[in-house]
Length: 246
Image 1 (cartoon, rainbow, N blue to C red):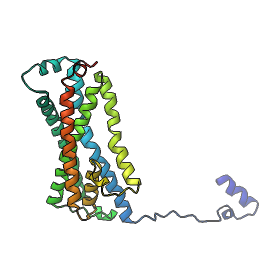
Image 2: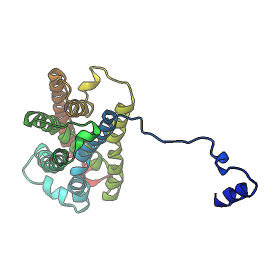
Image 3: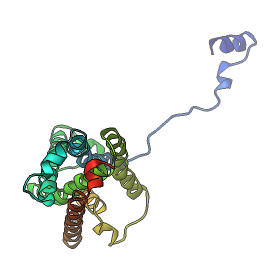
Image 4: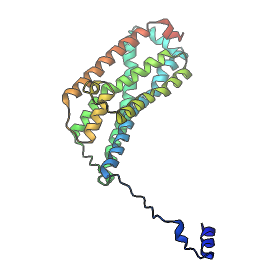
């Protein structure tokens, strides 16, 4: 640029001729739209942590125990396979909900300390709203660990279970992205697990009126799916192919 300017001056030409336009970059996004992007990012985080929180324990207590041959010893005890699944799922569910609570409460604390109003955000969540979100995620967290157990017992080895679990993370991520960029807003869709919980998060953070009928529907449907998955896993543990990894 210095060489071209010097050559133009040497020939008696004003160097400003190579810059006929004064381009100025301005951000046309308002604070509300910037705040919406931040909220959508947090929603993806909350959905993903419940799948990641208990994942390591699920792999170790399923495919890991099978390779160490401790699963056979456990099933030889005078307890039913349903009790075994309930005990394993309870521990994984506790880890998953603990991870979610840390992320959820951490975000609320950050918004208390950070000037969120500059981005068009006004997160002043009441204790009741926070309890509604936690209560809505209780069955979803159990559903996440049960799906992981179903996939882990289906795998043949510990390494294979780890490989499959990496794809599990893409399920909530892909679904959240699809809901964010699609125009699907049917009442029945809001009753589906994972979709309904995301709607609850979105409505609470954006201070929208609560649809208690939809909230109750997605909670009941998620619990029903949890029961069916527990029964399916208990039946699988009575199969020698699942126990021996055949």
